[in-house]
Length: 176
Image 1 (tube, helix red, strand yellow):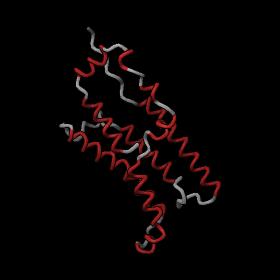
Image 2 (cartoon, rainbow, N blue to C red):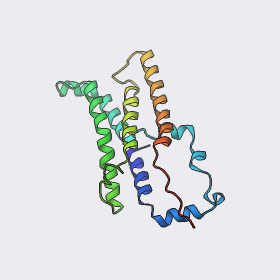
Image 3 (tube, rainbow, N blue to C red):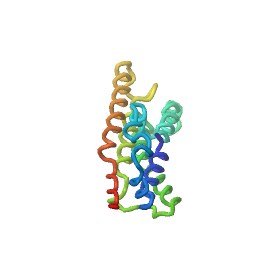
Image 4 (cartoon, one colour):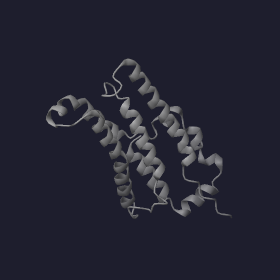
């Protein structure tokens, strides 16, 4: 999933009006359709927090690294990896703030209401997948590539599972 989608989903959840929440709570379960947990499948849990924007840019830079090292003195695979690891939460924060502003809200909801879990999970997912990119600069032997890919899949799956634990609590339904 992209950082854009993560931010958009969070802003949509934040901007749902109380009336919309009340209406949903009044509806019978039969009319709501399948619950989110039922719809969630292994593939969507696997890619839920993988930051597509950061991974895409990182792949472009890593594939160009042999040429870039000759042009930019001191550039290394580790520095590129670290920069993109730091860029992931920053990019999420910028996208999230922009989505909130577009929805007519303040850019920052405050530290208590900030969506920390998606930002941290996207960063951890990048760090796992950044090591596992094909022909990447780390773990170049076959065993290392297999281990990195396996680690990325396990980390991504666990992030999806833990995301359910750290998801915002549903608002209590109003008494009728």
